[in-house]
Each structure stands twice: as structure tokens, then as C-alpha cells.
Amino acid sequence: MKSKKILLVDDETEFVTTLSERLNLRGIHADIATDGEAALRIVETSPPDVMILDLKMPGLGGLEVLQRTRILSPDTRVILLTGHGSTKEGIEGMKLGAYDYLMKPINIDELIVKMQETVSKR
Amino acid sequence: MNEFLPENQTRFFGVITAETTHELNNVLAIIRESAGLIQDIIRLSGSHSFTRRNTVVDCLDAIERNIQRGTDLLGCLNQFAHSPEQDSVDLDPRNIIERMIRLCNRSCRRKGVDIQLSDIDPGLTLKTDPFLFQMLIYTAFRVCLDTLEGPGEIRIDFFNDRDSWSIRFYPGFQTDNQPFEKSAINDTLNWKALVSLSERLNCRAEFSAKTEGIHLHLPAFPQPLSVT
Image (cartoon, each protein chain N blue to C red):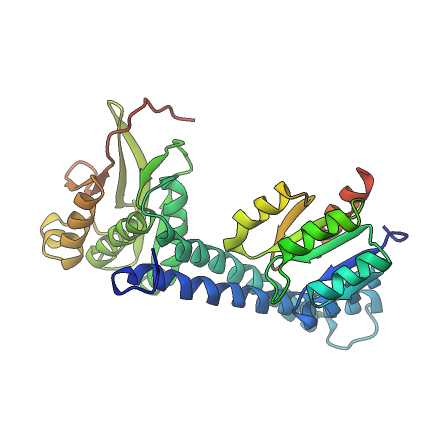
């Protein structure tokens, strides 16, 4: 995981910056983007190995970011973050090519296991 | 159908509750990560850096536990809020009972009542109005709570009689427990509401002298059922 590029995408700035710091303490460097457009700019210029993507964001929503990422960088594995009522969207996301989805608030150990799974199955 | 029409009040209630719980989920996510970062820093700093390290760690553990508690509650509430979206779905009645137990946990605790759902999962599927079915289960709880005179236990299980299923609510066997009194139940407005809801859902509510409890007889299923 330490050599992999991780991108965290969520409009809740406090959430992504704190999560990024926690991952950093575990030796995992993660970039952050707080909206869909910013995420796609990063995907175009420096495609991540794994993207942790919130489903519900203002502007460009998670599913649209997922679809565009699949085109721009097919090798990027996407793990969706959903709220409890959004399991349908999580499943829809997987049909659109997401690797998996996790419910918020997430457990960081579970997230790391999921990320390790995505890179080991490539 | 537009959820803001006057005749769709329940859908409107669902929309608002779903929005609110989603927002609360994000709040809890931030709290979890912030608390988690503090935990990470303390654990990495070693035991000699804080004079009250153990107290801080205990506080953080309490935060984590309550985050989980809030998350569980929000999950149930969010599922409840989405339930008016469809008039008829295939649902697992046991799953609905678990959800309603969680949602009325506070009012039960205030009365010192514990609700115990049987571990046996009959694997039933019921095609019905999910919102009204939740109302039915919740109203059954209220009837039981209304008639229990003091602290006690309500037990819930599924009972099969000649391929006909019922959900049974009856007092558990604790020393101070009082049985449900039929006359007391019949007098309550909640019982009348329970009967009315049952009829609406093609169920039947009755008081059973055998279990001294309430039985909700579920509608007949088109295919045979098997206990898993």
C-alpha cells in the first residue's frame, strides 16, 4: 500500500483531511479532492491506483465521477462511500464498475483492508 | 407520485428524515475520524507522555462506542425514512422487528422493559406495505408497554401452525413480571389501532390466553414456507 497512489474524494473537507492524516500515520500517503471536478483533474494528470469516492457530493456526483474515471483511467479501482440509505446506489455503482462500497462513518482498518484487496487483485 | 402533495404526508416525512439522517451520518464520520486521529497520536506517543493518558483513552473509547450507537440508530432511522417510497415490497418481518426494537429502545428502557427477539429466524418473506408494517410492529410494542405495569420483558417469536405464521408478543418469565391482562389490552386505544392496522394489512391481531400475549397472524403466503 505504501507505494500506491490513493485519492480521497469527499466534499466534507474535515473528513478527508483527517482521514488522510490517519492514513499517513499508517504509512499510506493519500491525496485529497473536495469535489468531482478536482478529482477528475487529478485522474487526468496523475491517475491514482485507488480512489475512495463519496457518492453524494454537490455538483458532479459520485456516480458521474465514477463513470468518467472508468473512461479516463480504467486501471483506477474505485471504492464508494455511501450513507445507510444509499445501498441501492452502492450496488448501482458496482454495476457501473466500482470495486466495492463502504458505509459511512467508515472504520479505517476496514478501509485499509479493502484498499489492500483492490491492489492485490489487479 | 410527488411526495409533497397533501395526500403524501408519509412520503414527505420520509424525504425530510432521509435528508437529515444522511447529514447526521457525515457528522458522525467527522467525529469518528477526529477521535480516531487522537487515538492514533496517543498510541504512537507511548505511555509516558500523558499523565492522564488512560482517562483520555477511556474518553475516546466512549466516543467510539457512542459513534457506533449513533450509527446503528441512524441506519435504522434511515431505513425507516425510506420505507414510504413504495407501497408494496418483499420484506423480512424479522428484519423489521429488529429495526423497530432499535427505534423504540429508548421508550422501553425508560420503563425498564427489555424486548427479546427469538434467535430463530424462520426466513419469511412478506409482500406488504413496509411503512404500515413498521407501524403495526411498533403499535404492538406500545400495546405491550401500555399493559405491563412495571419493569419486565417482552418476548417475540415466530410461530407456525399448519403453514400459517404468526408473530407472538408475550411477557417473559421474570420475577416481577406481570402477564398481559386481556381486559386491560382491549381498553387501550393502541389495541384498537393495532386491530385496525392488522386488518389493513390482511393480518389478524388477537389476544391469546395460552401465551397470555398478543398474536399477529400473518396473511397466507402463496408458496409453502420452510424454516431455515
